[in-house]
Image (tube, rainbow, N blue to C red; front, side, top):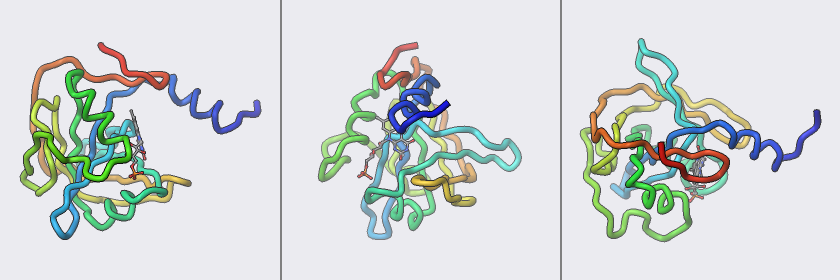
Length: 157
Ligand SMILES: Cc1cc2nc3c(=O)[nH]c(=O)nc-3n(C[C@H](O)[C@H](O)[C@H](O)COP(=O)(O)O)c2cc1C
C-alpha cells in the first residue's frame, strides 16, 4: 500500500491519546512549554517515559539543553492549555496560573498528574527527536476526566 504524508497523519490520528503539556526552563529562567500527545510509558524499573518533539521550530534544541521536564497530563477542563501551548504566540505563559515544581519546571494546577523527569537518552526519530526521560518525581493531581485527542479533535471520556 502506498501512502502520502496526509494519509499517514490521518492514520496516526486514529490512535486516541491523552494530551500533555511538557514544560522546561531555559538557563536564564524562561519557561518553555509544548503540547505533546506522543507521550508514552517506557519502563517501570528504571522509571522511564518518552515523548517526541519536532526538530523544526525553536523548542527542540532548547529542550535538549534544558535536560529537565515536567509532563503535565491534562484534564478535560484544561483544553485551553492544549490550544495555548500548540499555537505560535510571543509568551505562552503570560496571564496563566502555574507554579515551579521541585525540578524548576512549570506545573499547572488542576493537571491529572505531573511527571517530573530528566533526560535519559535523546534518540534520532527522523524529523523528530525522541526524548527518553527518567522520572524523578510523580505529583498526583485531580481525579477529573482526561482530555482526549482522536482524529484531530478533542473528546471527552
Ligand atoms: C493535541 C496536540 C498534540 C501534539 N503533539 C505533539 C507531539 O507529540 N510532538 C510535537 O513535536 N508536536 C506536537 N504538537 C504540536 C506542537 O504543540 C506545536 O507544533 C508546537 O507547540 C509549536 O511550537 P514551536 O513551533 O514554537 O516549537 C501537538 C499539537 C497538538 C494540538
